[in-house]
Image (cartoon, rainbow, N blue to C red; front, top):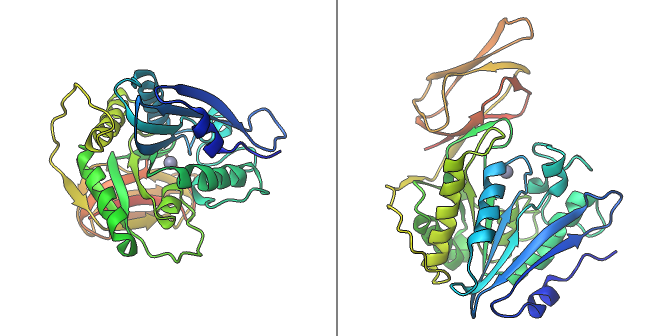
Length: 327
Ligand SMILES: [Zn+2]
């Protein structure tokens, strides 16, 4: 079975109209579909894609998008919103962190995907072939997953070769009103798999960015509000949506470099450091014990900076990212 063609759905949607539909994939079970909403404003304008639930255990992005879909008034919207409210329904409904439980793959490391692959590969392929070429802005919303403690931030790739798109992503990041703005280095070739959803969009020449807000497998209303404000601010910046609310401009902090601390010993992780905490180089930021409580190793910070995210629950496995420190 061929997944539906987005171009056709967009053409069938009239100005001022909203449609909800299910994109289905080659299926072996009932979970293999993806909800899609198109909201066309009264007047044409920018096409803006919003994706949530690439990781189905990251709830604040999913709930924020639910509220946005309810609130957006087509009479006030100029342009088109393409919304994937839960990109990974199997991960969401089966409460599976990081991966789609049907094939065990992480959707956010599978781009560009494949039309003949497993379900995760098919979803990545559909987003690559249908959403990305049909939008002008691609926003992928994430948060800390079930085990991750995370400081909210907005991020983009610093792609020197697509200077115009990179500048637009930076301006949108600033317009979001979020306090922390993170830029990642971009150094992949055109033919290299992009792996990540919004990196795929960057590779394909689209203005793309990501919001990260939420943590530890629950819905925090503060983070839901943060995400919604950021989206409204971006839409307002693009002239797509006038909001009555005014948002206090947060002081901006730029973090253009990231250092990662990996896990070297499987065990039980202890740390009194939280996301958003400032740490200094060589500071002790935790320790790992074996199953009997014997300390196996101390964890120290390789740099001075701010903890963007960290493992926020006890179990840790070799190779996992224990801390990401922005500086
Ligand atoms: Zn995620």
